[in-house]
Amino acid sequence: MEIVFNNTLKSFNPSEAGWQFMWVILLIGLAGVGIAVERFLYIFLRSSKGRDEFLKNFGTLVAAKKYEEAVSMCKGSKLPIAAVLGSVVEARDKGKEGLAAAADAVFLTEAPRVNRYLSIIALTASVATLMGLAGTIFGLIITFDAVANKPAAERPQALANGISVAMGTTLLGLAAAIPLLMVQGFLSMLSERVIQEMEEKSLKVINSFA
Image 1 (cartoon, one colour):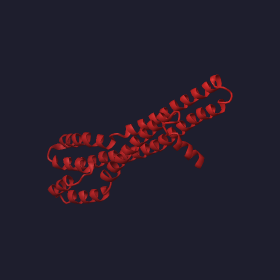
Image 2 (cartoon, helix red, strand yellow):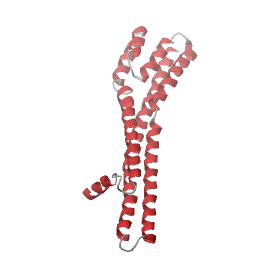
Image 3 (cartoon, one colour):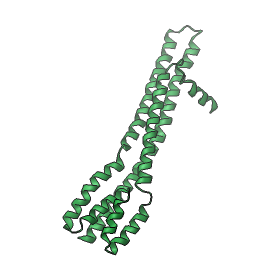
Image 4 (spheres, helix red, strand yellow):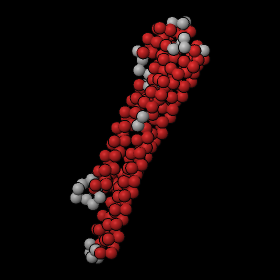
């Protein structure tokens, strides 16, 4: 493992063949990580944290017909579900169609914010894999060139360099792509849960007023 780590670090040196691929893969991976962190903070913390307590308090206020307090609580919350439910309570006297229209208007604003950039995480993972493949092909070109054109004395070192480029870029591409795809799947699961709950709770509140 130590040998692999040291060889991978060495591959970033501009004096090494294929170093451009290593840096591009690293930058793509870091971009994906940055987006994943931002999405985690938004989906898990801003959109989910404290949601159960909010829904409990909201339900208590609506059951007690303290609608103004419920709306005020919704406006004071940063939860996406709070914006949707608050719009429903504000439109409580507009009939079922008015309630549904009010909920849909806010839902169509909040839902895309929850899903935003998730596809880019998957994109960075795919690009990292493809860049690793491009580096592999580049390394194989070096290897074939060594077999065909290098003198016998220089051939072993040239072959080793070509194989090192091919394997190093493949390894780094996969090392960047696999965690990003796992994180993207986890965040997609969380976002779907948030969106489904927004739909479910808003429908229940609409039915209670209709």
